[in-house]
Length: 137
Image 1 (cartoon, rainbow, N blue to C red):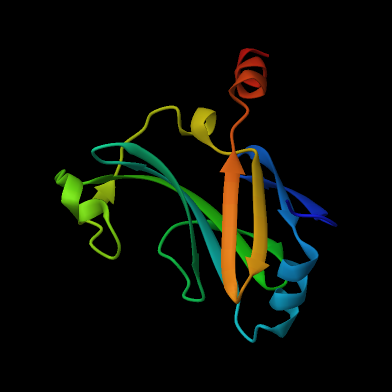
Image 2: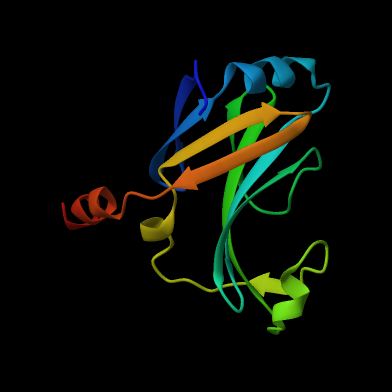
């Protein structure tokens, strides 16, 4: 369980998003000399997988500056082929961007970032019901 979270509100690709940072994550961010890029991914392969990737290299896709040292982004990708054995460890297969028509409907509304044992951790959540209500209005 993560305690003492601070909230950041913003808008990403036309949809509001809440970012929660644990005190550990906030402290670790202040020590960084580079921006941390956090990418929330929906990864279509043999299975559908939610991933949160961390990097200090600026990605090719659009990101939102959440704080001074933290940018967040979202993308939907798919593997070029599906081999169940490739999904373990660093054997992630080659991927391509997944074309999605109603991208706003699948955008996350909530990201949680923590820093434990010198490792970044993250998860994100959808609220499809609220997105549906907003789309209808």
